[in-house]
Image (spheres, one colour):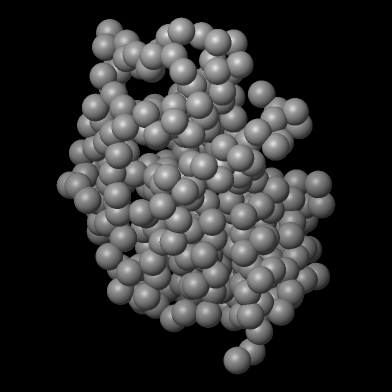
Length: 313
């Protein structure tokens, strides 16, 4: 087997950090060039072209993106669509001269319509209205899929778009307001524990169901696919398990050791009642997730405590 040279964009984030660790251990990989904004401005087409020409990769993994929680997505709408469009356009345009380069582009399950049938299949893409609060980000990711399809049809490239469910794990962004569900709750519960708060409040009823995937499981899916041939250009990556926000909060309370009461503010909105993706296509290729939610929450909180002083809030 010929080992592969990999160029990883977005190497310092939640996904990029995990990918570096997983790919370094892979017997499929000869070398990894880990690129970040420190060495390459992906908003600049020429800089993007130069690093690809210089490194001569067999595989490009695009984990670079502007990401954030609901508040950030809804208040920085221009930045989310423009910055993500620039990143995706420049990477994809830069590979056109070399159709031998395989591209694995990381997206998000938010690309799917608001009212898509559950579990959400890849075929649901572009069949309905997007969730309004993050539609600019979703449109940027959808545009990357369409650009990739155009390049594949016209120039013969292999471009795979992975759509993970809600991710969590080490190197996530832990904060009070702008984080995703797990890092946000973990940070707030940890602070309530330190402050000995008697009550901890969560928006909504706690009844909505969500699916979560440890970031290392996504990275294992990428490693699994770097040498696989598939006719699918969109593949969902999920755990296949749903947990209510109420049950998630209970698990986190136990992991963190918070002694107060977790209460739900039912005057606040719940959001979507369910959001579960269908991972059957990836399972048929032979991939399975390895990390349970309970184990993932414990290991993530251990990392959080060890790195608490160095985290940016």
